[in-house]
Length: 462
Image (cartoon, rainbow, N blue to C red; front, side, top):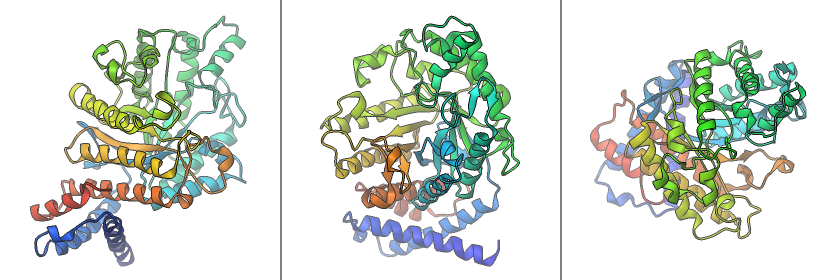
């Protein structure tokens, strides 16, 4: 490796060390608890971490895979601190807003975020990707190409969702409209899951996206390691069938179909995580009684062949009460711990908390509460991480750049306007990055240094 690059990596490791030290100093972190020389070992360990980063840079950008209940890249653990920004493709389709896509990735990268979840669909709407079944707007597809290529520049991987359960950006309702326009007599949006014609529409879209050749990189999507995973649907629900059989059959067919085209990428469903009829003993963990009636079934759904990791969302301000309540944070902790336990005991796969956040429009909201919520999610992930558990990461909903307030649904986090939240995110990224390196097979740290860094990584206070 060239000298200036080597210097840069060592500088990065030093910056990480100083960042972590500064963050911990504000939480009364007591270095006196270490034995003589251990503080020097910490610094040495960070320099070793820089060398590990150098080794990673020398390896080409590779696919994320699963190994037991962990994600791995190049056979090294890959714990995720990431974010959602769903509108990237639409913004990239207009030259006047395309720069906001770059800004999002730049800001996310600056706080160490490594994964972004975004939409690879816009069906029959304004700036539609798919204007009608299998008819695409090439300019919008080129915008998605730009999103993928730009993500790689900032070393951010993408979870690409393929359709929406909700009407925004078209969703299953648009597929039903297309079906009726073609002469079908469809009466429910849930016909999306069961009618063979609508299934064929969806499969055609999947095939088109997976086989797309990126016009910026000339890499076929199904061959591109920038793509972390394919998501079958954003928050699928089939309320017309509370047994869950209809949705289960759809998941089986579509997971298999994606894998028949692309055997290299991971696949996840996009579920919110509600417990269904296969595990009635878990109903008490659901946020409300309605959750068990929406046709989803967390454990059963994720036992489908071809599904590689579990997805869960976290919205107490939508599910329990709109007003901020004392019960919300304990719910988050128990909700996460239950799904991590299930992923370990019954599924044998990682679980990603693919959306979490709180609306600034919720009665009683303040930035301190949001920080406490983010801390609760992050600490629960770390508690799993240090035990080698299935808690593989989380994606905050959602990260916005400056000047996009008109798109804010109440959940937007603008890092420049939220310094305390930004610091919490950055610290979590640093800890997970260090843990990924700490657990590498190539790791050269001695046991004493491992113990020291474990104290840094898992000090009780964030």
